[in-house]
Length: 256
Length: 256
Image (cartoon, rainbow over all chains, first blue to last red; front, top):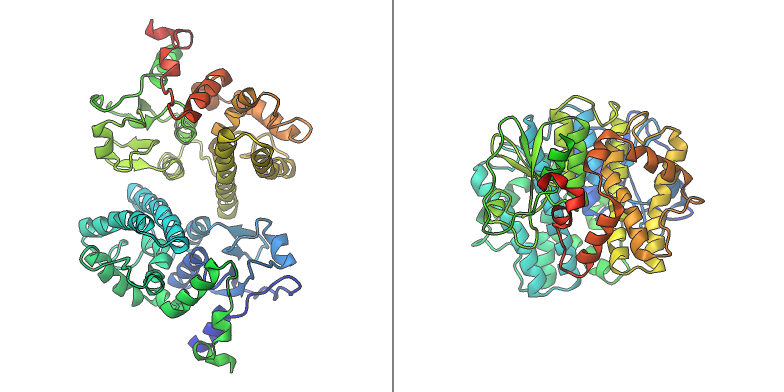
């Protein structure tokens, strides 16, 4: 079962000239790109809430016509509903799913606490943008910008004194920031000597990261750092190789 | 009454060394900057929903110590609640207020429609960023980027066939994009010959703009284009004059 799902998750990215597979009754359709951290957010919410969905991976450098018809901005993640409506923007989709599917609510009930989680998610947007800059020019200035942003989250874990930002289990804030945290080992691999998340500065974030890697939803879409690193290295050259996992027989044995 | 409120809205921007006026019982405190379009969004939501609030304007180039204590990122808008909690990020605050104060709901009830309004707000973020670039370098490339973004909203009004994006009255999408639309006349004043919103390309947006100017919430915080233009001109030099309205006796007679 897990192997079959991994062949869906890691399926080839469809390009111009392809055909959109028909929607599956009773399932949401997630248009994704296997290495996109924003799409990753939506995988995590769908998996955490056990919402049935299937995945179509989209080649973002050569977008299929049928994809642009559904989603004129051509962005992933996008979720197609059974009604034919297509939603995009990762945070909008995440909030929609949380409100529509009440099982395992990902936000605190209290509206002020909920607003605070959303403020932290917005704040992490700056960390994500700085990581992208660091990826393009790995110098100390960009490293410090990323780490100053991460300090806020280390302090927040210290003040919350709970295993996850969401409390005893991962919540919306955990899942919305996880995609970039999963990639941190890859950034470190690529940068060689640079440690993004040194233990003496980020002891709580490092512990949190280990706990997150044990979360069921995180495990489902998890990608090994070496593949993240390989993708990032291709991405910064301007020729991203979306199909690394589809092509790698070791990580996708069900296709043999 | 209106005159008294305008002296609050247009009050001087408090800087380092100032004292934070005490909170007023039964009122939210909005930390604002009179010309900030993001803060403007929160004024509109508070006024549309008749939520009692008072305003403290903050000097963003020389922030008061007490402001940074409450809001370490030092951003406006920020809303201080009676509990002492401080919320920031315009969209987070707007959503919090809409959920907390159920009078005049600003989102559609249907969750898919609500998600679509939020997608359009996100999409307008790109228009806002392009307007900022146009402000800094008023050339055809930036003008076209802004207009391509606005085309989406013209088409959307055409397909909705209603006076406002929200329907018969203004809703969240109307209020979240209004601050930049209120400033369009100012951009045109500054650019001289450039028309940002020519009638032949944007007939519906121009009609919508007139209807918005007649909306009660819009009227409360409305600023004449000549003042917007004066502020923008000072902003692009790097020395923004936050107190244009506080200093102008004609627009603030209650201070005489």
